[in-house]
Length: 308
Ligand code: NCD
Image (cartoon, rainbow, N blue to C red; front, side, top):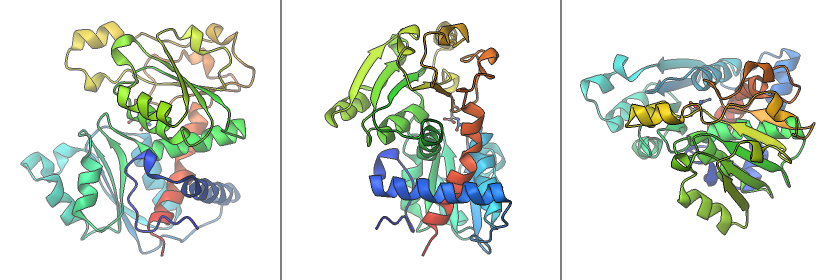
């Protein structure tokens, strides 16, 4: 039987299919409980610490809402400059300190590998809420949950990932997570922002079909899921290069005319310019439902990693 107790959540490729199924099933149970208005106490007496050293709205608030919905409590640092990191404290020492205050730790950090480093420093479960341009596994789990809700399956879907595939941690994790199922990928990115070769190679090595292009229109017909992402401005060394690429792909309603009627349009948010607001009213525009799914999925993760 799959178990996640006392486990860290660091990368999307760490999970077995059974573990993913357990997370999805637990999340569905919590979603139903929230719909009924149940008051839950699974995490009563427990404290979550959220340490966010990069900006966040959805990830931090949905983790905190998840903990509160489970009857637990939250202590948080919302920016590095208000914590002792600004005084030069190492991540190791911060985590050793926080382990004395909290039962479970959620970390967002600008450096690739930071969550893994934090996990080494403590016996408390550490959940990676984004490590620079690395991974964002809890986002991918809520993305998968959304796909299952919207499409009622994942096996055999055509999934098009669009935007900054080089720096986007959400798409790195999502590609790895969906590779557990028989999906076919189309990756649409400007040449300079293609999916890292290492990830494409890993997917192909697992027998997954990957087509790459730099043409958004070509990625739409036949797609079951169209996953748009933001060009990650904060990862560019040269602001002129960002300006050149920032509006590379803007999805408008008319571009969706050749799409399947059943297409699901997703975006991890925040949206800058990637999806025109006239897309929002389409039945397949799932991005705000996707954001809301962060709560039951993170409830599932918090309760499973702290379970006996
Ligand atoms: C994403 C992130 O932080 O990687 N946001 C999120 O967690 N929903 C996507 C982004 O910032 O573009």
